[in-house]
Length: 113
Length: 110
Image 1 (cartoon, rainbow over the protein chains, first blue to last red):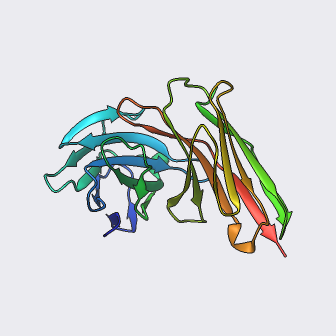
Image 2: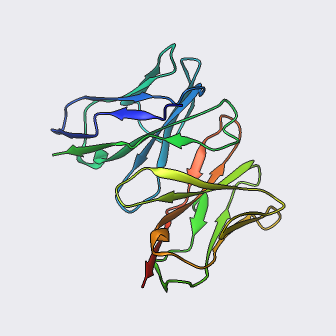
């Protein structure tokens, strides 16, 4: 059974640029969620994808967008990067219910300068 | 008020100590509850789910009180390897959004 994999592991971008982060879900999981974790805080829910559609969104602006593909992998896109977007971005996969918890990838650490 | 609130910490305890973490949540419709562990600069990892009847996994015991909207985690006989941040997590149902507390850092010393 493969776990959740994310790429890249680290990234440095300039303010105003765009970034795409990638995630492959754990085998057997069809739901993918993205979280942003700033230093010293708990992860904050960005959005969730199921069957290639966004079916839940946290308090993040529209410049945060995503995709899910037929193989359940997913992308997170952030446009017009701001300094405050610097954080650890975590992808998590689960079954449809999420009742048994989520499996997290090791994250992408994004630094905006 | 935050949706999930935890003890601010950090907790500094000697090896062998018993330590308890507390957590409260605001959404009474919450359906699933978890404790995750996060090591420095790593991803959160599921420590245990929390059930209404309470559950135990080795040195770890989790309790849930739905009436008080309160969750706890007890660690007995602390080990150096238990040093980490412990995150209280609530699944609000609906589209299964996970809400995390800010975490409580535990440092176990010799």
